Length: 50
Image (tube, rainbow, N blue to C red; front, side):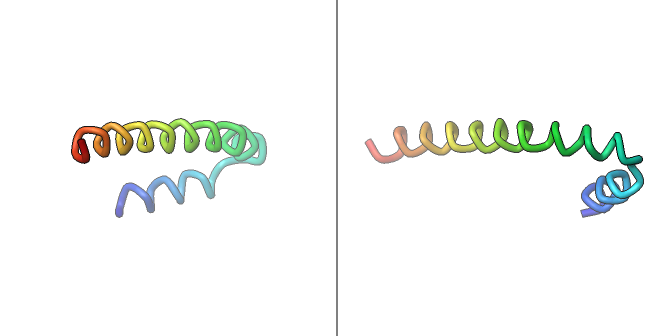
């Protein structure tokens, strides 16, 4: 969890323009990560339930 705490501190220390940039970037990153996880899960289900 140390990495998460480091990220939290880094985000907290961003200047307003940096925070705005982070807010624009993160939802797309999160959506792509979720899509990747869902794709992996679907592949696992297809292989393990056939």
